[in-house]
Length: 154
Image (cartoon, rainbow, N blue to C red):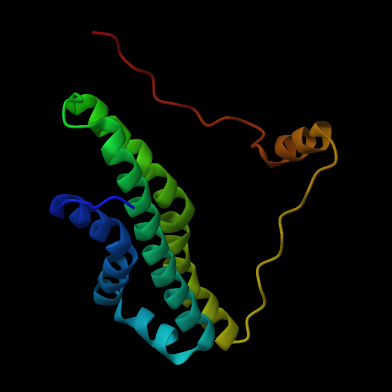
């Protein structure tokens, strides 16, 4: 990996620290989330895995940024550097940061649900053919449409 400049390491820290920052925001906004996270194995494991995914995302971003720096060079236009930076950031964000955020949000809810002994929600009904789906949708539509107010032209 090529040596990164100080501002580039700052970007890496921002990408890697996103799940940590979101966890702090969630805990501050809703203190009731901290109890299931700290009190249950599932909640704690989900937040720990989210933190590890954030660190992995930061490492992937640093590697991508290190590979991008020598190829662009100092004479490259700012628009091309910005595009390269954006494309380099899409991989760790898509592979690590978004799943980490999902774990931060779903982990405590799943831990509470398992703690209270509630059953998991049933899976959605699958239709074999599009005709069955259309038939089901027709049954759910109201028989008559409500009357809408008339718009008065100027």
